[in-house]
Image 1 (spheres, rainbow, N blue to C red):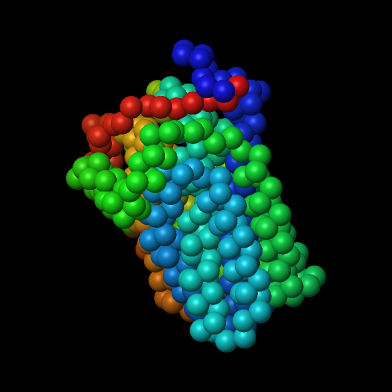
Image 2: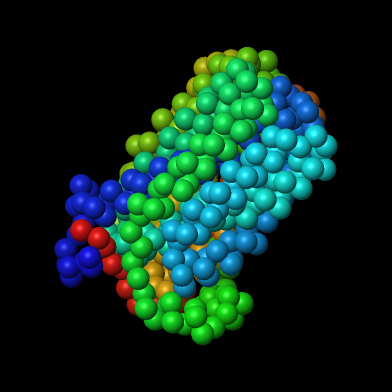
Amino acid sequence: MTAVAGQRPRLLSRTYLQVALAAVFINTSYGTLSYAFSVLVTDDAAGGAFGRDVVSVGFGLALLVSGVASIATGTVSDLFGSRRLMAGGAVLGAAGLALFAAVQEPWQAVLVLAVVLGPAMAATFYEPVYVLMNRWFAAPDRPRAYGVLTLLSGVSVTIFTPLTRLFVDQFGWREGTLGLAAILLVVGIAVPLLLWEPTDGHAHQRGLRGNLLRETREGVRQTTPRFWLFSVAFFVATAAFSGFAFHMIAQLETRGFAPGPVAVAIAVTGIVSLPMRLLLPSLSARFSGTALLTGCLLLLALSAWIASVAGEWWQVWVYVAVFGAVFGAVYPLRALVVSEGFSGPYFGRVIGLQALLVAFGRAAGPALLGIFATGRASYALGFQVSALVLALSAVVMWASMRNGGANVATEADSARSPR
């Protein structure tokens, strides 16, 4: 089932059915292993049992471990495929959630989050799916394909934030976490069984006679200084973005807003994000991916500042509108920029290397803001600092990439598409 030269997959083709299935997997993995913790970190959940700082640091360490593990998972995806990696990561993630629900001491919570959930994140978040996408679609079709994937993956926060809140309220946070583990286990095993994995005999043969460390080093050698400058700028932006996004519910609660309505408002950001999730990656055919990504980061900076001063519900809804419009397109646009330079057999390793920095940013932001923010005033200041950092990093990123493209070595495009 290979693509016919010059023939573009239709939106109702089997190729896009595969994209829809992959989106179900991503919604579930992000919902259970990431967005759920914006509720679990609160005082009436694990944050009350162990401390918000403990859960924040543990979640941050999990992201750090996921970044380190993503280098290996990128190599595995390149050489041996993504399907088994995704299923194995889902099983590991479900086990980690079950263990987290059972721990009694703060150090145990941190250990489970870092050692078990960290590797599970690396195997179940976007990167293995991005490798599949680059095999399913030729370069001209990827912007639309990324847009569709981002659109269909945009309901994770909308589903799992209120669902986790409901589980916690009805059953308690430990039983609720077990419910999340069951959802991840079922979806995480079923979906990879239904995905089509293009075969690449050369990659498999190289993997059989080589080793992961050597193949990973080969991926590092494909990068350039411009790629790393872009990646470092994105790392700084990710730290600021992830920090205030992770603590948004807690921030609004400290400003006097009721927990239930706040969870609903944050869930609405997922719905608001849907149109731009499709539109922004598709616009890369007319505008550079770097320009689109820079604009998104500047709007995220504005949303962080709005959240820092919110005292009325109309301000919360302005935040929902601004943040929701762009947050869902940030990571796919980042991957799209990288795919402009790497569309061949090294893509998984290169995106995995960048995922290491992204994970460090996603870890540092929530942890630092969680330690720093102990009251209303410190939360507001932390959000304002995040806004400033986002704006500055967006400017640096734009300056480093304003001539367009990641300007890194390009491999032959060997994408294949099922009909």
